[in-house]
Length: 207
Image 1 (cartoon, rainbow, N blue to C red):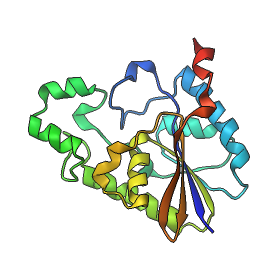
Image 2 (cartoon, rainbow, N blue to C red):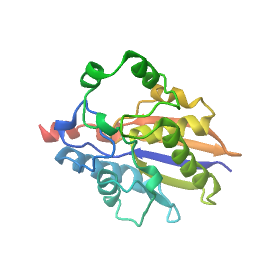
Image 3 (tube, rainbow, N blue to C red):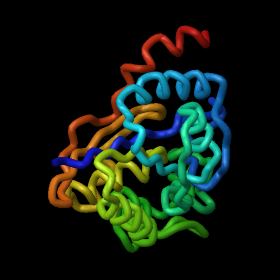
Image 4 (cartoon, rainbow, N blue to C red):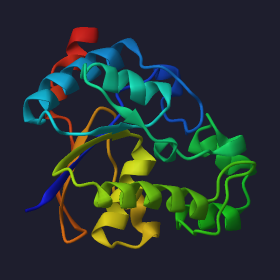
């Protein structure tokens, strides 16, 4: 019997962070994000079993998203987003201005030796995400819900599908989206990626 992982990226944060790299910054959900979180809960709750464990990033935006489920959850520090160091809360264009071309190429290729200035190395990030993946694979539950961040989800997908870690940028998951992976014999099959159909009309409510 296949084990199912449901991977949710936290809902929207303040528009002032649009286009910026937000990692360790512990920001809250925006008003729109709060509405998205409720819509997520409405969509996800009916498919969860009473036994489904819920694992959540300790960062505020993820915990606020989880709270709308009104169910017990555990946090795992390894589910926090990558630390962008001095590039935290900057746009790609702002980073490009001061970043050497060689280092920029290293970043874009997902080189595990790359490290954000005063931040986290890709290799270290991948290792802690791998620790979460192993925890999920070892869990006896047939369905597990994880609420975390975009970089974590795309890295988990690569690890579970046996795809090179440097390909994580190929998987873009929107805030408030749902992805699903079925696991058989510790091997993953991606059955849903970045679904946001449950958010239809939410932006209109906020306008």
